[in-house]
Image (cartoon, rainbow, N blue to C red):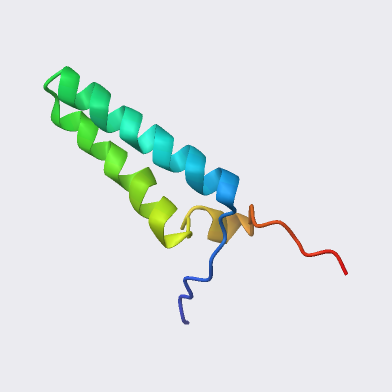
Length: 67
């Protein structure tokens, strides 16, 4: 059984994850907490345009092209 990292995130989703990840990192830094490192997860998923949690749910936030 293969695992494919086909892109499943649209630009709005990617931008929101990037902003959220940066906010989490900043709050963690300001509170001197290692928990802020959790912000790396949404940042990484934003850069690779892939969310592993969308796969079992068969979700995608990429807009469909109109013909």
